[in-house]
Length: 246
Image (cartoon, rainbow, N blue to C red; front, side, top):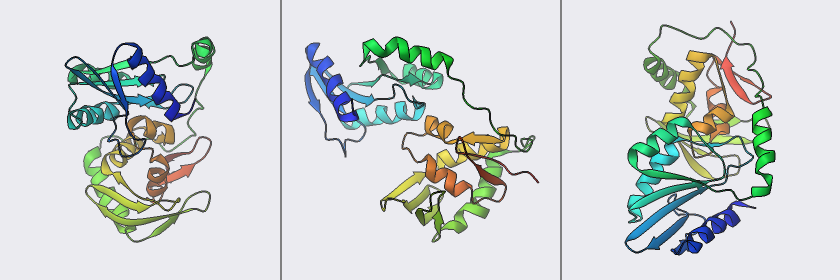
């Protein structure tokens, strides 16, 4: 089942529950995939098809849906997913009133999926330099951003496959770039800060960990850009960053 089909599947569930349902356009939906209405209730539903993947619903997704629901004139927000939800996302959802609804799209496969998740063990992080301790992480990030990342403005970077990323603008809001597919996009500053702080604190961060905390699937760009910082180095299998050994 592809993402569009999964959205329609979720819409069908709400239809069976007596709601009038609208599936929004696949692009430009501001994060609301389905609108379900019944009586005085108008629900903004965001669909996350994360089953059988390493991606998880994170707190940023919850907060973004909260705003998108208000923009769409809805009085309730629901994240419908067949995947996992991070504990801090659950906490945020409870606090701001976003419902998280588990959708079992393939009941016959659920025992297999659960068994896989139980047996799966992530690969150990490669040996890296001892993490930095006793530092002001926010101040350290600011120094790294100003000294090493801002000067990348106007430069073209090559990823591990030789594909180009052109950095159009770097400011305190984030980075505007032309991606390897030729699209113009922006990466907010917050995921860079999260990644740098984890690198300084723990010595290592994977693309998967970046994806878990940033909903816009820009981990490859974040890893590529931060690999230009002299104290960080790129490692593979899984693709990640670590503190460079002296």
